[in-house]
Amino acid sequence: MRRPPGRRPPAREPALPIRFGSGGWRGVLGEEFRFERARALAAAVARWAREERPGAPLLVAHDTRFLADRAAAEIAAVLVAEGARVLRAEGPLPTPVACRAVVRRRCGAALVVTASHNPAEYLGIKVIGASGACAPRAVTARLERDAAARLRRPPPRSPAPGTSRPVRILEPYLDDLAARLERRVLARSGLHVVYDAFHGAGAGVLDRLLERCGVRVSLRRGAPDPCFGGDAPDPTRERLGPLAAAVRAARGRRLGVATDGDGDRFAAVDASGRVLAESEALALLVDHLASTRGVRGVLALSRSAGSLAARVAEIHGLRVVRPGFGFGPLAALLAEGSADLAGDESGGFAWAPFARDKDGILAAALLAERVALQRVPLRESLRALERRVGRSACGRTALAASPGLAAKLARLAADPPARFDGARVRAVDARDGLRLDLDDGGFVLWRASGTEPLLRVHAEAPSAAGLRRRLRAAQGLAGGTERALRTR
Image (cartoon, rainbow, N blue to C red; front, side, top):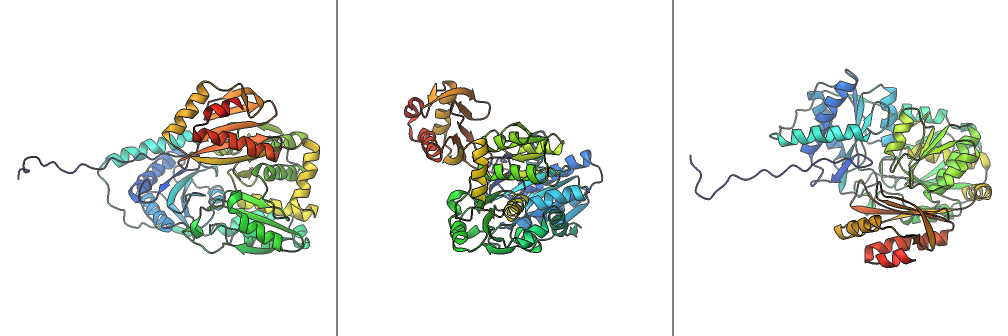
C-alpha cells in the first residue's frame, strides 16, 4: 500500500551519545538516562569484560535512588543474556563496598547504578574495573563507542530476567575495615559521632562499623529517600548546617561526619560545629596514616586539591604527584601500585591497602580513629599541623554553565592576566580548564564539571578572608566582569 502524498514515516529520535564524566555516566532520568541506553552500555561492558577476563563474574549493585533497583535488574538481565556469570549485591549499598567486592571476588568488572552526589532527578552507572577502581578513560571511551553502535541498531526488546546469584558483600567489607582500625582505642574513647548520611547508601554502613567498634553514633537523614529530602546528597559546606548544629548541641568528645549519596565522598565537622574544608580533612588523614601506620611512598593529589596536604606529606617523607583533575587519574595510580594515598578537592580519599578508589566510609572512620587516639578535637589537631607547615585556605564554588561563560573563559585562557587578585601570575595551565598559579602560593582554577552542567571554580589563598575574596573575583567572570578580574 502506497503512502499518501506528502506523508513521510516518522523519523527515529537520534540516539543521545553516552558520555562518561569524571565519575561514571549519569544524566537526568528519562532524558539522558534511559533504560535502553543503560542496556546498551551493559552489553558493551559485558563484551569488554569478556575479552579482558574471560569467565570472571560481573557484579551489579545500586544505591538508594529512584528506579536504581529496577535499572540494576535490567542490567543484570542483559549481562546474563550476554553469557556472563552475574552476582547481584543485596540491597542498596555504597559504591566503595562494590569496589572492594570486585577485588575480593575476583570479578571482571562491576556496574553500580548510582548518580553519586547529583540531585535526585539524576541516575547513572559507574563501571568498576577488576582493580577495584573506576574504569579509566581509555576503557570508557571504548564503552561509549560500543554503546553508540548498539543504539544505532533497531532497539532490542527488554531481555527476559536472567539468572543471577545474589551475594552479600557488605559484611566482608565491614569485617575488613574494622580489622584495620584501632578498635580498643575507639571503644574506650567515649567518642560520640554524629553521622549525616544524606538519605544515601552510607546509612547502615558507617554507623554499623563505628558501633561495632564501640563508638556511640547518632544517625541523621538515615532513612532511604529517593528525593534526598529535596536537596542534592552532596555534603558541601552549605548543606552541612543541620549536622553542625547537632554536633554543637552534643556533649563530650564528639565529631561530625557525612557521606554523599553513594558513600564515596565525605565531609567532617569539628566539635565546635565548624565544617572542615576538604583540604584540611585531607591533610589530617595524611598526617594520621603517616604517623600511626608509617605510611610512606607517594601521595597522589588532584591538581585542584590545594597545598596543605602536600606540605604535610613532605614533612613525613612522602613524595607528592599531581597527575590531573578528578579522582580518575589518582585511582589509576593506586591500581597500578604507583601511589599509596590519594585525595582530591571534593571529599575524595583512598588508602591503597584497603581502597583503590575514593571511599568516604574509610575516610570518616579514620578521622574518628584520629580523634579517639589524640583525644583532642580535629580543629586542635589541625592548628598543630599548621604551626608546622603553615596555613592556607582552599575552597570551591560553582557557576551555571553557559556558552557565554565558556567563551569568556576561552578568551581569558588565550590572553591570561599578569596579575589576579593582587598577586602576580607565575604560571598558566590551560590543558583542562584554566589554572593560574599565583606568587603568594595560591591559585585560581576554572573547569567544566564532568557530571553536571556547571563550571567549577577552585581557589587557594593564604587566609580564609583571602579565599573568599579570590572566589568572588573568579565568580565575577559569570557576570561580565572579565576586565575587573584581569586588573585586580
